[in-house]
Length: 184
Image 1 (cartoon, rainbow, N blue to C red):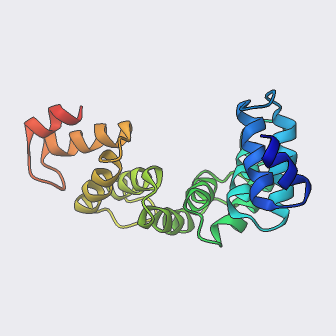
Image 2 (tube, rainbow, N blue to C red):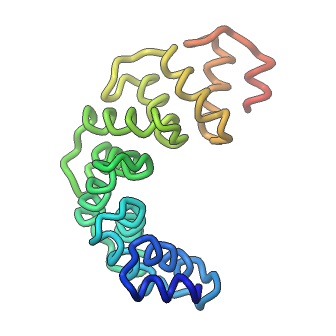
């Protein structure tokens, strides 16, 4: 943490972000959520996408700062526009739930798709469920199985369950009880 502190004090966004993680996790320093947010904010103000996401997450959860969904969504948008997959997923979730932004399933689906294409397991899982239900995208069980498989292969437990369900019932994929049992 000492070297991160020296670089952070010189205004280096990457170091401010890294030091924020140190304070958030109590790694090498005493855990201090407010200090973590302060450092994430400094790096975010310099346009550092990962810090924008992390600062947004703090606003979402109220960790180290008062909960503010609109502020979180703004920060997620800034990071998402730079291609940050975690921020794309988080902003998609904001649009899906109407938290800090207007509820808009089509926008949520588009953001989930962007994050899923970058390998974000949570986005792949959400997109798979949405394909199963026809939320924001066309109802398509084959696409649901494909996205759920991507997330399941990364160890996403809920995706494993739902892919197991599809395998058990032969929906969107061939019926395969052995695979269903393995996934469950």
